[in-house]
View 1 (cartoon, rainbow, N blue to C red):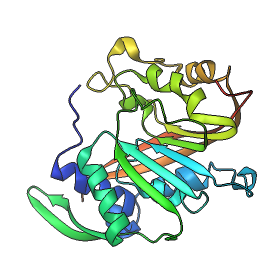
View 2: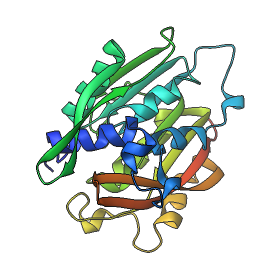
View 3: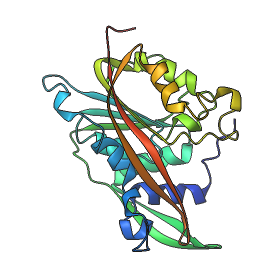
View 4: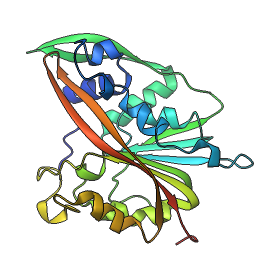
Length: 250
């Protein structure tokens, strides 16, 4: 499938989603405030930081990281974090933030009018953060045994989610954590109907896919808001889950 996430408009939209201020993302005081700061909340509300190893280097992998805000957030807890996405423009933006800690961009106001903004990030320079382009359905075989794997709003944007789900037992080391968030928004333009992991029972199907290798530890509702322009917004609710890897390496 063609990658639809390469336009300047979408780049600005996702930089705003990840790095915009609350007022920029939701300028209406009576709008849904509980959907703000989603890339941070998918980490903060799901991670069990107390169980991360303290005597060894902790490694994490952020799959479908978009423009990288959740990757930087994971670096607050882990020593080495790699983020990947299929979009070259998203990864280029994330890499620029590593180098410069800020990135000018524009987001749509109305019609063809855009508003200027600057994405900014702070992180501990002692942490090792990297970004690379990769297909979540065909990840390099050398990627394996991370202490933590995070994937937010990815599953229902893949052409074949089962390829990613089947890879998870190798990605997460025994005792490690898997943080998933998904609204299960199945659309044929992203995932052919025959590859949906469920239709009406996706949450249960996900449990069935993961339970041979993972134990479900936590489930929360994670609303999010994506601003398309100042009078149009997407409001959705992801299911956020934390899973613990069982057994021995596969």
